[in-house]
Amino acid sequence: MNRNDSAASKTFDVFNHIFLCVYGVACILPFLYIVGASFADSSEIISRSLFLVPRKPTVAAYEYIFSSPTLPRAMMNSIVVTLLGTVTSMFFTLTMAYPLSKKNLYGRSLILNLVAFTMVFSGGLIPTFLVVNGLHLIDTFAALILPCAINTFNLIVIKNFFQALPLELEEAARIDGCHDLMIFARIVLPLSMPVIATFTLMYAVGYWNDYFNSLIYLNDMKKWPLQLILRQIVMLSQGKVDNADLELTPPPAQSVKMAVVVFATVPILCVYPFLQKHFAKGVLLGSVKG
Image: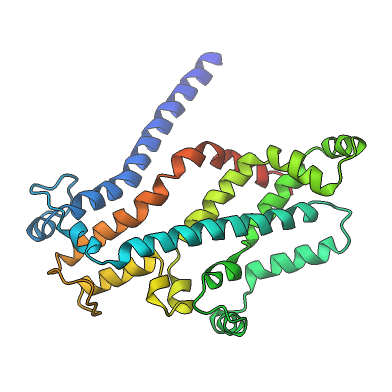
């Protein structure tokens, strides 16, 4: 019996390793192709359907996208929006999730039902725009942050995590004279670093990749984030828009797209190694108990 179990276990391990290796290659291969194609010329992109290393590397696509003087400013705008947005979202999410994790909170069920309601129904684009316009947030970074400051799914998962923490810790802190704010800051938050790191990464990626809100709410090009500027560069490479700042002869549109993807992905990709160890643990801990 043990021999059969051991053989079955080894067979499963072999199959599991093969499957994970194939899946990993399938995930990494497209990105490696994008990086390679961003350094390729027109003839190679047309003649070769898939390659990782170009025969004649060229940086024409990167020279093209960096020829715009607005790109450094757009990078700084994206960094500012991502930092401010992530801090704002985490602050409101944590401070709302902690009270909702307390079963003795008056009106808790009603508030949770209203929160869950927003996961199914939303105000829509036009009503949201009218609210943002009515609050005089058009052409401000606040329009990119405040309307999406709290993600309902993130809020519920963090609430579940807080709810699973031992009550004895808070009771001991109260005996020592701590009030609710001190308990939250000195007891709960230090114990919540995995889930905080996880959703900080989620919020940061969301703000970094977002361009649609900028397209809707920002009219001043000087305030455009990187994603919106790169969108304009791709459209310019296809001859769909005019921009006096980009005076070089456009390289192949496909290589520009690849370079844009690499340029927009690498900065946020560099953050993952520092938070990856907390990612799976944070999601798991916050989703076990409701």
